[in-house]
Image 1: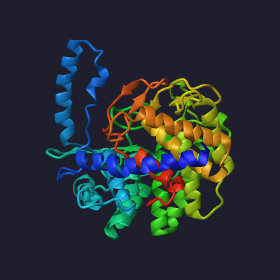
Image 2 (image 1 turned 45 degrees about the vertical axis):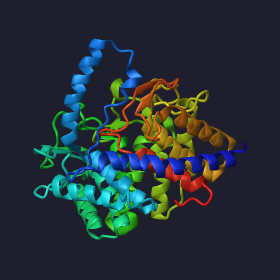
Image 3 (image 1 turned 90 degrees about the horizontal axis):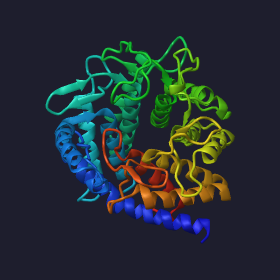
Image 4 (image 1 turned 30 degrees about the vertical axis):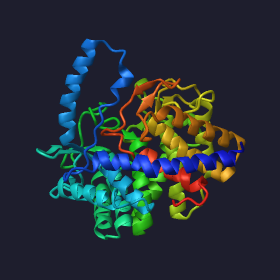
Length: 431
């Protein structure tokens, strides 16, 4: 079977899966509350039967407690990502009377503005609760970025002006409070009033990245948000910020010379010397690669395909399973992956990057890897009829974390990647 035919058949299969099963799953399980999206899944316990009866009982008790807590908690990342997903689904033309994705997006938008937006200090809270109000008032760059990304998409889906105005106002807050006027780039972790957190070098439970450091992760999501905001607002300040973000990501975090890549730097851009924080995430590297191209298109400047290929080829060489398919999680530059976990979001970002690579070059190298990745996802990352991906497997495909939804897993990575793949390869797709 030719690569073109195989890609076309996979795209048709995935469009059906996305339209008829995946998106209805997310709609039916999350958009059923007046107070934002309820995002929780205890996982399929049939996949962990090997545990002792005592551990199963303890886990079941803890699971009930966790469920009660998670039924009322609302994290900024999951709320914003589902707002983006439902907005995007409506833009794709998938809304029906049974699954009105614009209405579902409106639910998330209302909760974001009415409950998660800090009308006194600015920015959005990290975590709220439907019964107790604000439970984690931290202001995190990562979260502000995802919110802008979602607000812009809801503006596109709804045609309303207010979401874009909120996105622009949020951008101005981030620029005033997070932009590092001394060293460039953006700080990432603050108290509610934007006072810097003092626990530098620590990880806080449920908070992304390392306190006090600058990360490729947060900066690439900030670039992602700036790209969409600039496309809609055409604001000169947003453009300047986007150019700065691209430059920093290209030079400080994910340069074409992968030997100098890193995930974290000190505020003055000096490298973090601790071995604990060394190494690279294959997922972030390839995610940045294709998002960089998208940002450059938005700016109407030449796409740096050489830079993109240097990152993708490195991850294909050192972080891809050429026997079974799928991308591993992380490793050190020019060394085989030291963590061979296959996380859902890494596979999704690999799918997006390889889609761009095949569409541009149509080489045997990229086409073979894309077909392997598609087969891996369909065989191992999807474990249920609804087509929703589980969190992770081991290198050989054994399930590790079988949950389908949670604070960090809210459909955006995989829905975006599938829509991109379908748009590129499905004949006469509605996307």
